[in-house]
Length: 230
Image (cartoon, rainbow, N blue to C red; front, side, top):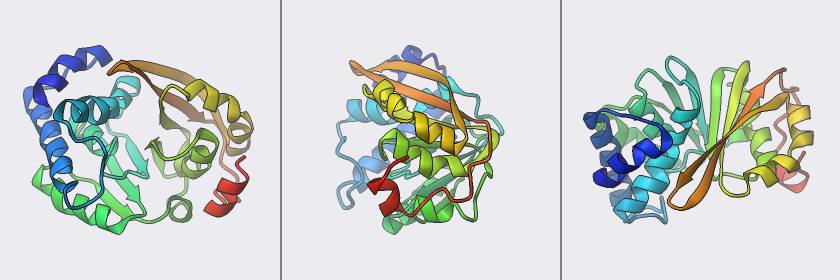
């Protein structure tokens, strides 16, 4: 895992200290170990964990400067991309949000063992937004939903001037085309599409800048969001 990560970091334009690389791989191994008793990931081969979890997460750090910024990882699952970003950028102030309590309890247990500090919140994204509205510089999300749905779940957390960082695969531009109405209603504009080649596939970080407050009626209940995306 460590060798794979070390060789691949230049592909996304990053240099990280040896100690940081080792901590990243420690987290990757912890995820694989815990996966034996908890459904965290379908990716368990060390080389694939390095590429498709660790390296993929770190593309965000190649896209925006996270130093001294606040970031919420919405639907963090096993901690990707938030935990690798915090390991690689300790000055980041990280909140991890997921609705599955057992995942969050595991993260609360394992992160201090790795020297990683993060606020872990167990809640549904559309419900937690009420008390955390427009408090973050960035909201990031990976493998949660198609972009029109994802934007309604993430944009309310972001300050005006901040950005939603949507991590997408080969369908990134197709999803952008579906999202023009959502972007307009939620107060975000596409600023940049940063694309990275990882393991033979196309990975993208969409930077969607918050240009106006998100109207208070958003986010709606999830059933409504899913039934009638913006």
